[in-house]
Every structure is written in C-alpha cells, then in structure tokens.
Image (cartoon, rainbow, N blue to C red; front, side, top):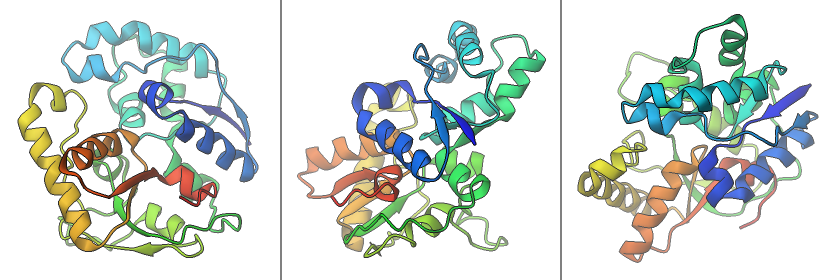
Length: 248
C-alpha cells in the first residue's frame, strides 16, 4: 500500500522524532511511504482563528502535494479533522474532495485500514496514562466518549497499545477531559488553558502514570509545558514512538 505521509508543521518544527517514528512504523507494517517535500501547514491555525480565507494558500498546496494518493496519514487528529471537516477556503473540486476523503489519523489508519494487532518489535515496560485529544475522540472517533453512556466502550489506541510487551496502564479520574490546549485557544485564553493543563497533569500523576501517551502531540506539548512548570516528573511520548519500539 502506498501512503502519503502528512507531517503537521508543529511536529516538523518541534518533534521530528514523532514524524520519523510514524514513517518507520508505517514501513514496518508494510506500507510504501512517500513524503512530499514541499508540504507545509494545512491551514488549521488560520481557520481556527476565524481567518478562513487566509488558509486558502495552505489548503491549495496541501491538495497539490497529496492529490495522487489514496491514503494520506498524519500523526495528528486535529489536523486530520481540519482537512476532513473544515477544508473549505478553496473551491471544492473533485480533486479536493478526493484528498479530503482519503486523509487518516495514524491510529485509525493502523487500526481500521491496516488492521494491525501485533507489534512484535515493541516493548515498553512503563506505566502510561492515555490521553485522547478532543479532535481524535469526538470528531474522528478513535475511542468512545465517556459522556456517551449509551455507547459500547471502545478505544482504538488502547487496543494497539495493549499489544505492546510490558506496558501498564493508569486511568485518570476524568479521562476524556480536555487538557486545555485547543490550538489558538491556549493563546487567547492563556490562564484558562494553563489551569486545565495543570488539572490534567495532576489527574494522570495521581493515577500513577510515569508517561502520558497520546496520538496528538499538540496536547502533549501543552501538558509537557504545564508539567515542567509544576515540577512534575511525568514524561510524554507519542503513540507512534511506542508502537515503533521506543523503550523510553
């Protein structure tokens, strides 16, 4: 299977190791991965700030980069959600609609499309707390929402992580509560965002987690900053790194 790798701009700038782990994991699982070299931001920050028209250039470039792929994979739920649901600053041609319909968040791609359930190269002998980003949880549906009590509980990231040798799980009291990042929300509502982040970190720490793991590096970036300011010993890791065989 040929896959176009979409690396969000903040991952490229701050966490290139997550992009590398995503690439290596997809290759381990039998994919032929291509990375368009002139890709940039998908336009989400502009659209989230109410400047939808300013995202047109980024959206058009994204389509040019990925129009030739049937599967486009990114290690970020919020960016995938933007492309799928809010990619409207440009005319909705057949090409644009094709790209929007073929973009996948990494966990759902590995779980649903590839159907992977074994990662024999992976071992992570640590206690982790799982954080589901709001976009991954409520827009993409990688896990059931705790507030939807009528639904049968499921968690795609937990299914994948449970196949990793030696891993242990710590469950916070409020597992689906937003960590407060919210993209530009963390800028224009900084005090509220920080308080939410502190609460999230403390919840995981009380549960006994050594690491917080997530499929959304933006959430982890926010929580990592909060933990450092609090003097918390918690560490943070993307799910791609664990599934690809990271030990610590």
